[in-house]
Length: 300
Image 1 (cartoon, rainbow, N blue to C red):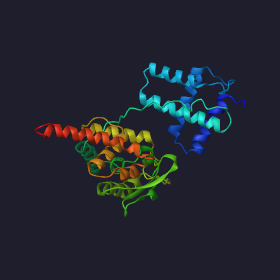
Image 2: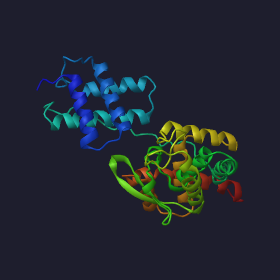
Image 3: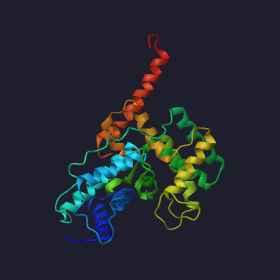
């Protein structure tokens, strides 16, 4: 089959999006990696992928490593080309899969900054105090921050919540995660107070006809950029290290494990497909335990 590179990449993107249910972020990353490979190999719209060999893929990754790319980036790019050539082989674009024996680069175990419990409390107290004497937007910011920390949901999941997804009586929220997988996550009383305040006294002042739970000044659904700006501002006001909203997800997971929750429960709360992903947080809790031991034990 002599299909052009551009058409092949577009078909691959469509298969990721509609066949595998991948998120827009994943599709962009994988397509970007495949396009980078095509550029490295000198493929253009008149070229096919049939002559790409395992040695070509290894040379590309070696070039990336020499260029200073991290192990995490190399691992993802390896996964991208394995997914691409696996798909290309299945649909008959290539006769042989050159990525079948491409070794995986082991990704480094790194996590964004994790707040300790005191820092998380200071951030949320800052949001609550602003809401008490502020505007409807301040009440919204308090509710968003509380819900992010209480549930560990992703920023995109938060932005996608509709009014009917939040059950204030049961203290649960329904979110749509990666791969369009729906899950229901519980939250505690502090988040309930913030959400109740927002739903009853904040949102009615702003919302138009939208079904979105969280809206902006003009009544339309908040986007991820707005949520990031809110968390950056609250961190600054609380006098804690600058964090992104995703750090609240990592903090929630770490604090759940430190509080005695089991890995399977945390996996379900976070919506991880693999338990191995959740196990990353045990590194953080182990490091903290080691630090506490060294400070407190007389024979440390």
